[in-house]
Length: 430
Image (cartoon, rainbow, N blue to C red; front, side, top):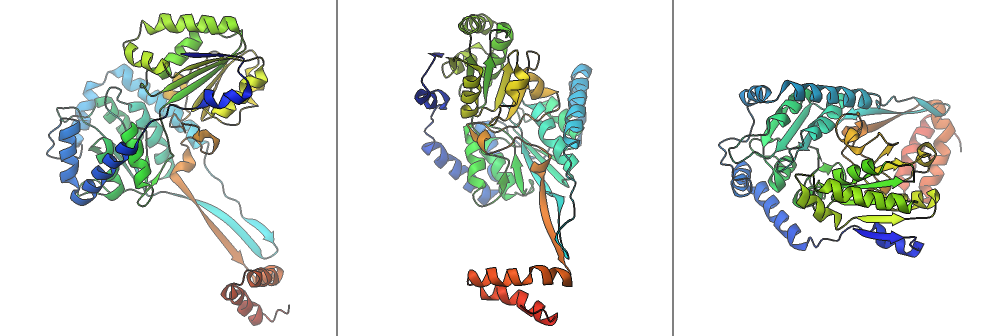
């Protein structure tokens, strides 16, 4: 890990820089796979499943029998945990329902919005070394609340052609409509273009590796919307001398085990805390089954010692982290200074893992600095706002002449005429 002690502000841009990856060859590979899926549909998806996931599939769709079998394979304790998490996610996202209001901007001019669900959404759930069944809950639960008619899920099978049973249980719990055995770029292509088996969706959600992210960005240019641009996962911990070093180290390592391209940052005003966290990271790292991956991630990590809480928050906002943990004595005051972050965890007991699984907030969040402009997934992510307006004769009298003048000034005569003919019918003089 790199340690910065009281860096000058001109050096902060170096501290917040994400690891740079050359994706030129990757993008070419992704484009080739997407084109093949678009051209050959199911046949191409099955071929790539055999090539990349070593699964020989006769059909892509998960059957009802497979879902029933999965319920027998998942322990009662884990099923109870899934139900608890689903309940909390549901309660939190239901609180985000939009209530439109009719607004009279002028007498006789009424405007309002209606929230309309996206009819068909696609969810991508990684399988691999960490089958993210929690992400099923995070993505499908708000989709169901929003009223999406069809929720399509794609996830890679194992070499035997089977989907992780916890993913299937979570999908059933959250109300997924259809589940397909497809991973990687081929899954994104199938949902973007549609195949004989996989329906074409209108928006794709979900995390993934560099190939999946590149595929989402490519299909979003012409064919389908996506939740947000995203990169590798990251956490920033802001800690003072009152923080618990064991907790801080655990939070940093919980993020580091995501993958070798993840990033963790500690910002502190205490030299003692910096040293204690460093020692705790070294100690806890030895206990992790994913030690090698986490150790590689720590090569991209930064420990930063600053002079004040104000500086800590300024640097955190510049970094715009996916996850921001504030473990200080005055965390409530510092929370008011948060401008750029995906999700914020306050106090020593609010570990990132709580939000990842069961507190109720969503864990699908902007990374790579996109928190400066994007929100995490929420109920609005699955809905569109359709705008309505109604004008009476009085409304025409109140805004008609202004519309004519503005259209004329923009040299859009047909726009002006559309209002003029109405004013003429109503005998409204200028």
